[in-house]
Image 1: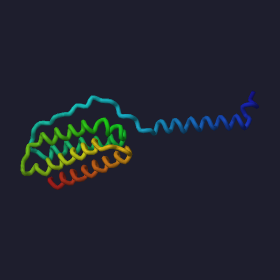
Image 2 (image 1 turned 90 degrees about the vertical axis):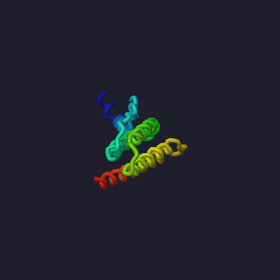
Image 3 (image 1 turned 30 degrees about the vertical axis):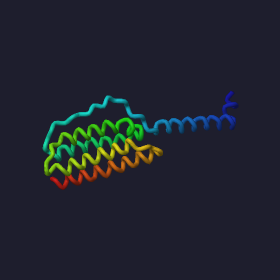
Image 4 (image 1 turned 120 degrees about the vertical axis):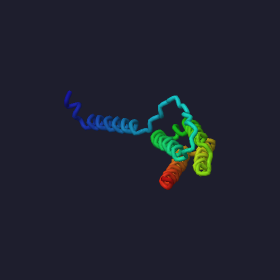
Length: 152
């Protein structure tokens, strides 16, 4: 019985089965996990004249969106971009217009309009679309951070 288990063909087939099992398990664990379905509620902030506070809140929303987009990929983009756009619009609408707030209002509007444009585009290559959205979000985060630093 033991002689049968120690034959080269049996040892080779056992090693091959172990290798295939290891590779399949590793691949399954590395795959991007699907985003969890959660009830998305747009939080409507209070009306304010503080443009910096609104910009910081929008920056936090955008950073969370970027992190989740990196984590979950194109599926997350399809499912949550409309909700993120609504949240950013609500944050922009909470800002009371004024001379000092005009730049911030324009930045917020340009951002959610660009995200809406990405959402409405016909997608041929999902990875390319995901990278374009991430590129836009990263540029927007940098611009907003610089504006916050300058205003302090």
